[in-house]
Image (cartoon, rainbow, N blue to C red; front, side, top):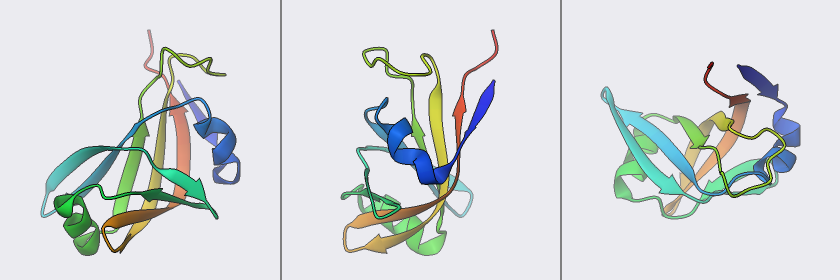
Length: 109
């Protein structure tokens, strides 16, 4: 089951989640790192995700952020993951993501 999330209302949805995973890719290889992105001015900033992630973004700006379900949170949608697709750029050691789409997702079952 998937529920679209308006990227203009992303801050409200993010209140139900903790740490995320930043997925970047280059030359057919995917890199996944744990991050705690901050949302400000319509962009998500992942502070210092590592040299590999920064290099991947420089080569391919298409990224996904994945917040898994947080069982300790009093979420509006318990058991759902949040996926945010976006276009990224580097800013020093940071990765800054402009969201292009978002969805809450829960496996069927």
